[in-house]
Image (cartoon, rainbow, N blue to C red; front, side):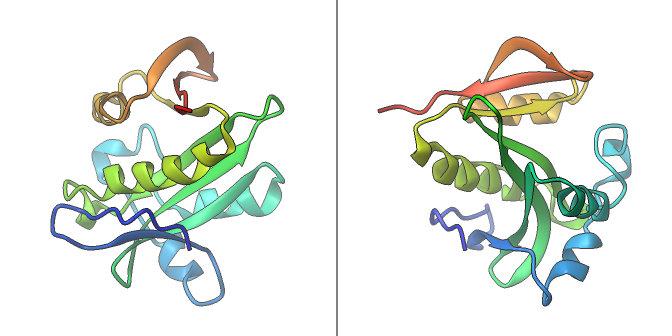
Length: 156
């Protein structure tokens, strides 16, 4: 379990846990709001399949207390940088600070390696851009497919 002590606005404890035999169905069923489907798949199941078929990404279940509320994945690039990808918070759980707590928790854990933490988002996804900027990510000027690459450099 990855736990930085982060809580959502309702005071629920947000943790990241391995996807396993007990929670994979709940993770697979996580679905974003309809207006977000231009940027993320209709179900987190697609990200679970990606991590099963790739050696780059690792999926994590996002929990608020003891309930699965989302999915996020992470990976390590050839240059040693850590990447956050495939975050989906269930539509019913959005606007409660779960996404912020998820990114903060994963960044705290990934930054321990002393390498930059990167992610990407669609340039029209203003909510994601604002969230990541508020957490200290800055666009690098690079694009990954059709997405803006942003980076957070860990402090010593």
